[in-house]
Amino acid sequence: MPYYSDNVTRNHDSKTLRGYGKVWDVVFDTMLKQRPITKFLEIGVGGATSHINWAHMFPEAHIYGVEVSSPVVPLEKSRLRDYTATLENGEWRVEQMLNAQIGFLNMQYEPLEISERIRISYMFDAFNEELVKRYINLNGKMDIAINDSKHRQNVPLLMQHWLPIVGDSGVWFQEEFASAENPGFKSGVWEQIKSPNWRLFDFRETSKFQYQCSMLGMYTQNQQILETVDKELDYLQYKA
Ligand SMILES: C[S@@+](CC[C@H](N)C(=O)[O-])C[C@H]1O[C@@H](n2cnc3c(N)ncnc32)[C@H](O)[C@@H]1O
Image 1 (cartoon, rainbow, N blue to C red):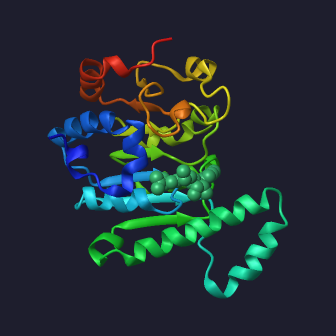
Image 2 (image 1 turned 135 degrees about the vertical axis):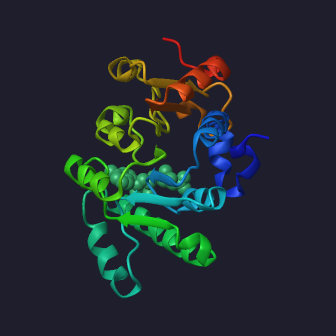
């Protein structure tokens, strides 16, 4: 049984329904034959379900996360929420804060051996290039890094400053390479980004959850991983 499918928890239902696990099965298995997976980043934390899943799945790994919102503390929350609700997109921002708060609590409910390995940076805007440079200097390279934050068609282009975080052997994933907006997929974005190190997997016909945006981008300089996905997952690869 491949490592991802064998170890995935219910927390990952939506990602499994999309089909992303097919790629993770191949990539994780190939990487685990090369070395252990000890540093794992997912950008966009929300309710932290994913981070908790990764912490269970990789017991030797530290799981990193960055999240633009904040899990407001009880004393401050009503004042902060009232203020935030007056800002542009205020109601949506309050929703994100509530979700971040749930995520923060969810991590505390986990046993210590899980929660102590999860490291979240809140109020961190993943579009901010300078901040990202500092984050990479501070935390070093990741084996796996996944972007599940903002989902808009041009996000893969705007997040390229993250790619150095996977160095020359880690793997970067861009979830929802197509957006939930209509039309979901902009081939122009792919045309600008594609290179021998990028692959794009298309689940739009098979995804059982928000099918219109279910495409997964992958970037790596790890040749063995590129060769293995080409051999095993060619049928999923987007061909222009
Ligand atoms: C789809 S949710 C993440 C869900 C989580 N990865 C999971 O699978 O359980 C997206 C999250 O990204 C956060 N987000 C949106 N824009 C962001 C940005 N520019 N930088 C960091 N986080 C961002 C949102 O606040 C939201 O919590």
